[in-house]
Length: 282
DNA sequence: AATGTAGTCAACCGCAGGCAT
DNA sequence: CATGCCTGCGGTTGACTACAT
Image 1: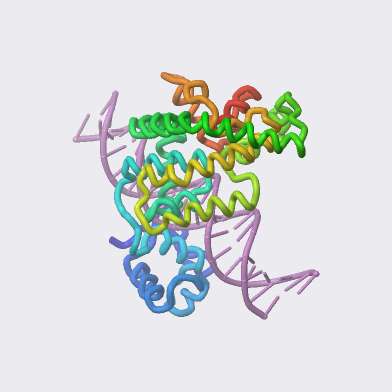
Image 2 (image 1 turned 60 degrees about the vertical axis):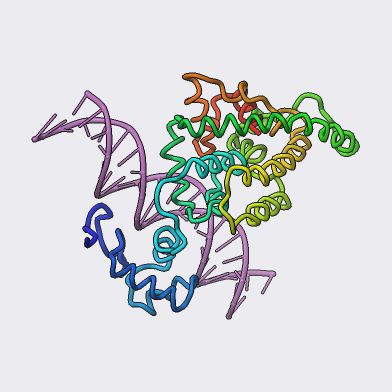
């Protein structure tokens, strides 16, 4: 079916076609990639005659035409992984996508927004969450031992400050950053690289839940240690927090998910207390 | 059967980082 | 070293579809 000239209004802007791709355009692009490989997207229009910007070509290829794409619904396993990785990395869709072979960042992003933006996790999510939290709790005791060891060393370098000096309140102008730093994102380039590596090691295989756990939990530990140091032993409990307290239950659950899991919300947390709660997510 | 609403998906935009010149 | 270009990422928008009323 020919792409209807709907929605995007104009079909051509500055000589570039916009809007839905036609099958002919797809064919041209696929053929181009087959011959020249991925990359050099800006040269696609010159070489193929496609009236599409390099950006548009790349997007079309990555999100739709790539042969290794897995079409169809997100499976429960994938859903679990998405949930867990999002908790670990936040809205780093491309990073999450690397752990889900055949899935694109766009797909995952859309899925997340569809399923969790409104704060209503599915049964699968609930199960995955419960499973994950259980395992996390098991790790907690081990981590506390590690923490004690680490704290001994940290005490030499940093004041233990005893007051949890670094709370959301201290970062009023960067509320989401607090969450990002403490929970979602590795708080150092080294950790970030580690995270990337950890994810990358699993590219070649279909990640099932256990695989995800295998690399996530070490990461969580790393974050935990780092976070604890970073936050002066305050709320940075990372893996070490309890499930029920963090997520609430029943009807509130939705709202809680909405605010805690949606790191991209303009206001991530409603108040300082919640902010602290958000930071203890992991 | 018609209409309204919510969910899903594809595509665009702006920004930032990396790299080549 | 500075600049410009290219690529990739995350956020947002809009159309289509399915479901409910």
